[in-house]
Image (cartoon, rainbow, N blue to C red):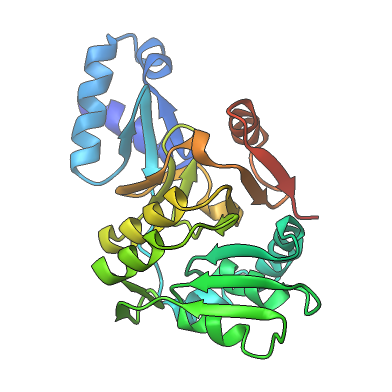
Length: 252
């Protein structure tokens, strides 16, 4: 099989499966793993995939503006939020990272629950404005409208002054081999700080975020305490997370 033909097959597999494994490709094509790794390097350079140990993942799509993301998959995000808020306990201190699913979580927090919420997203702070038992701490920093969040050194420093029981981490992409990743470097720094300053890490993700990788890793798979997903999520991927110690919750 010619190089271009191998590349066409690999691109098709990434499109259909979201991932490829180097030794499987070597056996399929009847070539060495070194040849496959060279193929994957070329495809990654062209933007068709993101290399990980043992293979490659489909790249995360370019993020839509936050206003569009709030409307996309709204019903699924409502179900994810209803399951995610079960992780909260009275008098918890919780980081709620920016993101449309996390916005749904903020809106779903029971009104009788007393807790402290720390967020980098003005929309999330506003969603909790009428929650009489929630103390809301809005982090400072440089506001980026397309992300709906603040970031930068001031934001990271503010996060480092707080220790939380739990963080609801926003994710552009999540995979059992690469972990949680983001499309924006500044955003990723804030996320990493939240992970470091939290006793437990939770991600609620729609199925289209799974099995993908974005350029900037936020947390390794073993760092994830809870993963809240739709019932349509790939079972093998969920088994991989569970094997690494992540509690998987299905939003039915």
